[in-house]
Amino acid sequence: MLTALWAAAAALVVISLPRWLPGRVVAVRGWVFTRINGDESIPIPGDLVGVDRFREVYSHPAASGRSRGAALSDLFWYWLSPGPEMHQEHLEEGERYDAVALATRRILSVPRARAEELTRRCVTRTLRDGQGRERRGVVRLRDLMMPAWAEFSYELVFGEECPPYARDLIVGNADDVVTALKCCGLRHMDRRDRLTAYLVESLPRVRQELPPGLTDREQALYLQGAFFNTAVVQMSEATAHVLMALAQHPEVQDRARGGDDRYLDQVISETLRLYPLFGIAHRVTTGDIPLGEGSAIPAGSVLCFDYPSFHRAGFPDPECFDPERFAPGHTPVRELNHIPFGMPANRPCPAWRLAPLMMRVAVRETLRAYRLDSTAAHTRSLPNRGPCLLTPLGAPRGPGHRLTLLFMRFRDDWENLWRSLVQLVLGTYMVWDARRLRLCERHFADLPGDAIRS
Image (tube, rainbow, N blue to C red; front, side, top):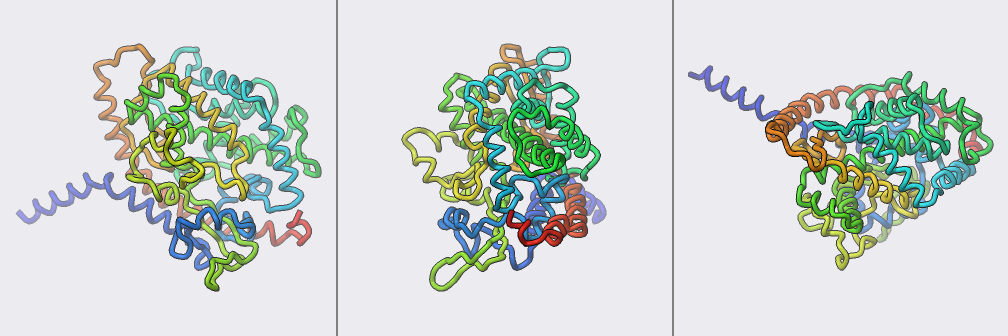
């Protein structure tokens, strides 16, 4: 009898694992992530800096260090290799950053109509399979959207249609980067290096002037980091998040399909509030930041800005998906705890104006073609890549529709259990490997002071 009770209890624990273990693993990873720098790491919002001073500290001129002096930077550089020293987000202030930022603005300075038409073409093409037929059935939304944004970024940089070979190189690179970032797989540097080699050969075809004073490899690594890592990954994830939210809120999906761009903008804003693309953004203080009453954040501190916590603070029922929060007549967006593209005073995303327009077009084109359904988990990091059932608009739902969604939920629960354990193991290994290689620390140790400032 006692044996049977123990067996039943063990069975209940096993069955319940998908419900509680992944969340615990994520919490452990988050705890480790914010404490890599030990006592130097300051979580914001937190005990020292509350939500009410999040923007103030984020915007302070001394919160401007990007990589140098933070052990956490070794991990980011490891994930973003090759060329993290040329990644626009991780360059320190100086002449080199100014030249790179100017080049990025030039490449992004396309007329709105052209950007929208380019998005429409790329997304329409990716919504069909290799034979030009409508896709249908279960897809992973991030995987579905990544080729579209790869083609978009290529045409933005080179001013010509993206050939299939280049698209596959870009997708392979971006997928490898984001898979490693989420600790779902180890790095495969050969995939990334193939894109670097292709970009070095293709530099003469770039439609805008590239930053002067850089070697060919440095110019290629700049393009790879800004446009073929960050841009492709973040636009793919952002679009997948919006489509997942619509798939799980059919009433919102039906209204968004009605053609009201203002409402679609509300949907996008609410999605980026609930599922911000940044988890924790770290900055290294280059001077003291006074907090009043004789206290200050000392120079050399690592500030870990927690976007999800900030985006949930001050909202009623913050876990609920509600696009009406951003409806006309409500609190102006500038007064909300909502900074999906960063702070204007601290290097916001250079595509902060263009990205919402492109996302709107991508979502609109998808809704014109499909009805979306998903029962999979929707979390900020989206490690499941957004499982979703696509049904061509106007086509009847088949008899297996409910069964497909039930199986999707079951499969996603158990995949999430296994994936969380993989993330814990691989994440631990990559943290160790990054600390062993010390890519960032060694880079700055080998540079003279003048080179660091430039």
